[in-house]
Image (tube, rainbow, N blue to C red; front, side):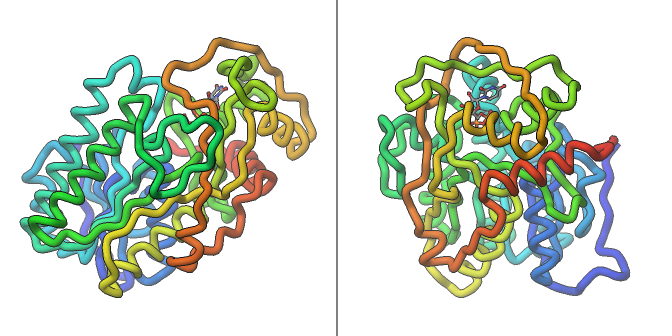
Length: 340
Ligand code: UDP
């Protein structure tokens, strides 16, 4: 059933921002940050992976990016000043098994959205990209100028959209901010929203399920990588800090500044084993672990070596230390969760 709610009575009469994927994990946190900054986030989401219950901060249009008419209607109805584009398939492992799914959904979805934005005269676009566009760089920290050589279809599809944005800026003046996320973790510290995927595939929620017995154990995907303890190293960033960066990115565009790409990471690397150890300490419980095979498409080491977002956007991450991220995720995991 299609649902579409207009702006309600009590809502702030701020500027509208169209948030695709706003019912999902990162998108819903961005909506909360946008609303706190006085914007009205209009969620456009097909609920394939998101949750209607996570739409709490503005109007909701249930629609799919493949339906151009639904997009055109949303632009006509709300006249958003900007787009934040989160809606995407985002699982590395799945993208290796079914690349066509990723190329079709992510790239054609973004193309429809960009064309609809241009047609509606909406010239500011904030895009969720990923550190997976960089691929593996042999343990070297990656900054925004590092060569992008994605090693999975997920990263490939995101890099293609970055290219698309550059072309549409050249032809139609679509200014954009590209955020290349590292590993997003944690949950809203106020407990309103959090991470809930079906099926869950991400390290921290899975290991917390193993901690409280909802799954028998966490499988470590590979312990023979060329890293200090043999497991993959990632850079984890708190979802609320990430959401704050999006509001700053929107401000950047509203100030008329040029299109720019920013890494969003903490700059600290944690191996899978280190995350497991930290979770054991935060929860004061045992994490049952099984050693498994490598997951195809995984880089050994992905850590941001850039402080561009801090230096240029004024981003000030507050909860991106491992303890806070696990604590917030743990608290969220103890709640009942969203229902359809
Ligand atoms: N990982 C793992 N076991 C799991 C899930 C993930 O060992 O059940 C590892 C994965 O190989 C990667 C890291 O944890 O090195 C983070 O994976 P996640 O899927 O959370 O995020 P991604 O890096 O794919 O965006």
